[in-house]
Length: 294
Ligand SMILES: Cc1ncc(COP(=O)(O)O)c(C=O)c1O
Image (tube, rainbow, N blue to C red; front, top):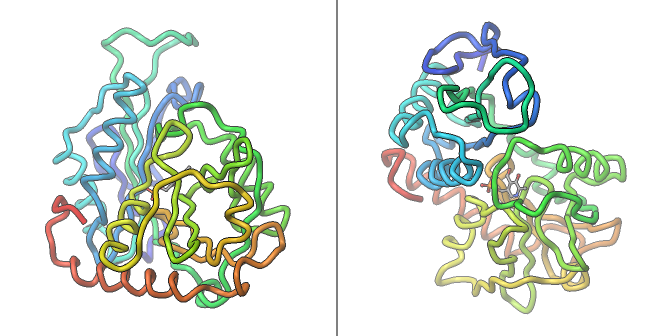
């Protein structure tokens, strides 16, 4: 993307991102009162678009914020923003807040207040070859977030602090724990490979139901047994492989946790196969319409 400020979409209008403005009275700014999605575009096609949009709709419904666009409207916005760039590997960011009103009141504003809708694209941060060859370092931290992590809320302060703490301790992802069990990464789903099985925690209020999580589980079908269950930090430390998965980073191997090697301390054969399967899958579906699942 040559232009660092491509076209964005704000409340029904397309305009240069550098010119986009919202009010400082917006409840997204004052209270982090909103929800968001990050949709990856691979080979020019939004990946798992329907799942992202359904999760967006669900997050907004849980927050009791009206969705300003139907599913097809968000697809059109996404396709328009992608088409306005020359890139084929992108991240599309979608956000809706409860809108703005004069004053500052925790209670919901009157129904006449319109939600604020915003969308922009940015280049996909491709993982460096060295990262794929060596894997990344995870750092375990106590999960200090709220009790509704299943909602993709823009209130990300705990995630921000946890990710920074992991970075400060030499890691690239915070692996979050509650009462000795692993929940998820600060912005990713966690998988372990143990006894030849792929294990990931169940979707409940303590984790975000990940779109990449589901893609990985589907790609494992007929090849790798999958167990959806909680697992402990000790289970993770003694696993043969640990992975993280997210729309923004794909599926990546975690080769050390808290400075100690996982398995051989190099990306495992199972991850390598999953990574290759994901790339093949993205190639195979590249020409499908955006809303066909997968
Ligand atoms: C807290 C958290 N968990 C999991 C994920 C992975 O979700 P997805 O695969 O849909 O990106 C994310 C993505 O940003 C996240 O922020």
